[in-house]
Image (cartoon, rainbow, N blue to C red):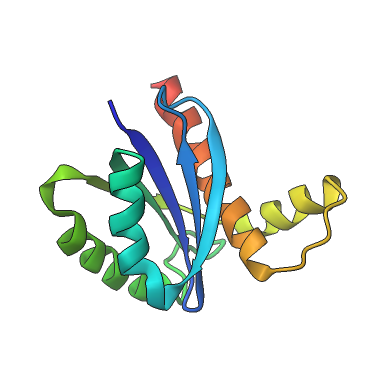
Length: 137
C-alpha cells in the first residue's frame, strides 16, 4: 500500500505534499522549480512508493476552469508518461488553497521567506481535502 503525493502546480514552482502510509495525514514535502518536475516525480514516486498523485486544478469562483487549468492539464499528461500505469492520477479542485495556505502560515506566525512555502502548504491542503472527502465516502 503506497502513499499519495499531491501537487500544487505553477509555471515557476510546484509544491509537493505527501500522505503517511495509512493515507490519513497530509504533510508538506518540498517545492521544486517547475523545470525540475519530471526528475522530482521520478525520484519521489520511487522513494515513497507513491500509488496516487493528486493534482490541484485551478478554478474560478464561478466553478469554471481558471487561466492555468490548461497548463495543469498539459503537465498532467507529461506526468502520465513518466509514471505510466502504476500511478493513479486524480484532478481535484484547488479553489482558494493558496489563500488558505497563506492564512495558515500567518497563523503559525511563520514569515514567508520563499513563495515555495505557500505552494507546499497549498499542496498539503489539496491533499487534506482529498483525504477528508475519501474518508467520508
